[in-house]
Image (tube, rainbow, N blue to C red):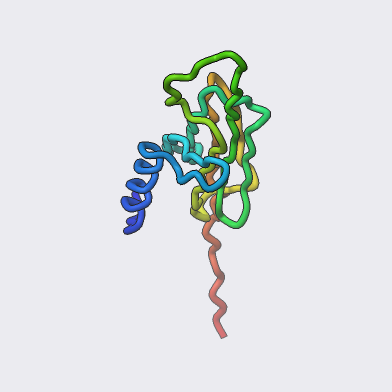
Length: 137
């Protein structure tokens, strides 16, 4: 089941515009990396695409129902090279996700392989229904 979010389409449009036109040049450039989100019996899986990013420059933070991913891919300008076109994503990357309470953010697992950050947010331990004894007086 997918929860309806009226602002999701607006947010996706904004991200596409930033990716296409670039972020305003008022400081360090910030990009929103592409992400696949899937769910199965194990939990919520997020695949964050970070090509060319050093795994040591990736930061994952889980707090107060939000899972955030930040990374950096600096542009290293070389002396004596004429750059004609640069289309690769450089700068700071950031994405945040609101995670429902049905998942346990304290047990997030992260692994980085071939430029893709794999995050697993396991399901929260299900509470078993308790049978209440009715007392007769």
